[in-house]
Length: 188
Ligand SMILES: [Zn+2]
Ligand SMILES: [Zn+2]
Image (cartoon, rainbow, N blue to C red; front, side):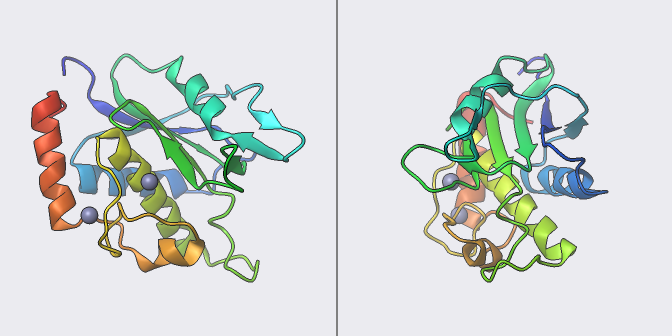
């Protein structure tokens, strides 16, 4: 508790973020988790996370980098990148988070395109990004995967999986979140 109160959304992409994109994630974060959120503006980028052989970024290395420099008033930090993320055992990941920890990272790379590889309309892309940010943030608050397919905490392996879920928590996850926050003293 103490002064740590904000969820920080930290853009660490190669290009500039789409206009208004981070604000949309911020609004949804505030409404779903009922915590104040802020956009963190910085020019620093994680070095050494790019794997030239795979042409992708190590989500684990980015996460470690993010956690080295957490603002004092941060409850959580979600790094958002346009680089494609991987963990060694998987072709790609939409994101990675510390379960019950402070950090998460999410990639926009796979969320822009539909299954045929065509760019999706911006509102659809932004809804996907919000869902994946909320999902990873849910893990940092201690929530695990949910079996209810519409819940934002349900597991998504593909873009259609992301589209099939809502950007809200189901009733069970919402109840569990309140419990977890009481137990960890991580209350708003
Ligand atoms: Zn997950
Ligand atoms: Zn759920």
